[in-house]
Length: 360
Image 1: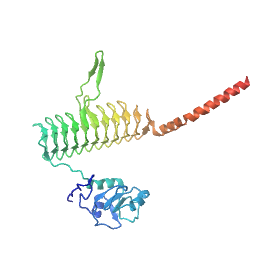
Image 2 (image 1 turned 90 degrees about the vertical axis):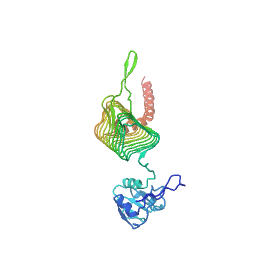
Image 3 (image 1 turned 180 degrees about the vertical axis):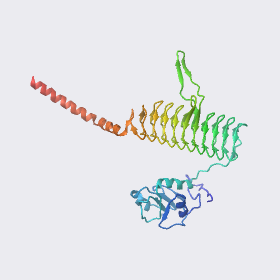
């Protein structure tokens, strides 16, 4: 499918970036087209509130079907529970996932071509794959290796002995310290810092003595690291981010933390040193973890929770200090009743005082 060109007059470029019909789109997202329109060209995909003519939208259930039907959308991506519609519709099991796949076809952002920009400073001992792209003013240290199809955007700093896997993308102004390993298809967003020293100091009579951090950071395949997130290197050994884990912006991960595969860590989470987080854990925004904790597989931490002890597998916790979410909700409900309870106590005290006075 040949690439088109964005409209230069458009503030946010939109338009036909691929030549694709509705039938081809259905095939691409693994759906079944109903209601005709197979040969109609698709110009994009968008949510119901912003969809335009020639574009495809999606609904998760019948509640939003009317809005999609009255929109300018060409067609609707819909779940199997929707069996008829005025517009053509594409049946899929998971409309949101299908929408994400469709949206990828019309991504107006373009990765640069392979090659090394003349302003980049690349050590002679570094190994740069012929199909990698090194942007303007990038620095690549001694004996670092950058794999096939990796893209390093401008102003990135890569230290010595760094390994960057095939297809990995490091966005502008990120910093990868020495002796860090990034796997394949990793995405590092702008301002992220991977491999900085952790917070390690030993108190003495003469003040704080710094503990040198001589370990490393290993980021496994298919991890995404948000903007301005920091991942500290281990004191000794490894800080590890497991395959498929997704990390939001402004997250702090301290030294020697071990995060398992397919975790989800939301914005402004703080994880203290040597925590172990097992597979599939979800940490809500602004959650804070004390050091040396073990968060077992499948646990969910609600936003703004303070974690001071281990969490068992699959448990949902919230509050500070965190407790099972249903208990925290009851506690919050009780807290909201406190003013009324205080008023009732005052009335009871007054009645008791009156009774005691009458009995004298």
